[in-house]
Every structure is written in structure tokens, then in C-alpha cells.
Length: 50
Image (tube, rainbow, N blue to C red; front, side, top):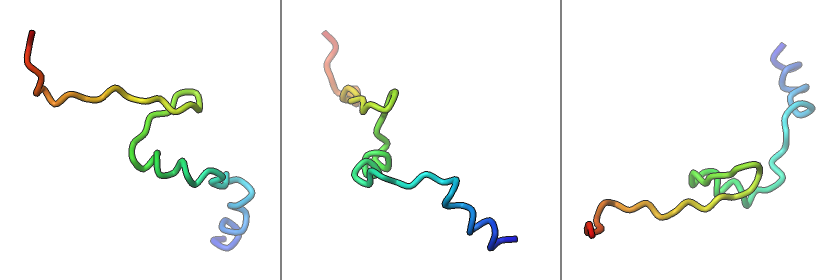
């Protein structure tokens, strides 16, 4: 049973065809509709109130 599952898995799984994007995913990057979205810099609350 295990052999059959392992043997049929490549037909259903999608291969990683963009290894350079894996780095972004591991760094918790944000993508919307397949496009990379840059996040604004998060302030640590160190700014003075005006």
C-alpha cells in the first residue's frame, strides 16, 4: 500500500519550478494573486508623536 502511494504521488504533486521564490516564502513574504507584494516597514513604536 505504501509503495503504491509513493509511486503515484509524483503524478499529483506539483514540482517546485521556481526555487528562487522558495527563499521568499521561507522569509514570510506576501504574495497576492501570484504577485509579490512589498510590505511597508513596520515601525517599532520608536517614532515621536507629532
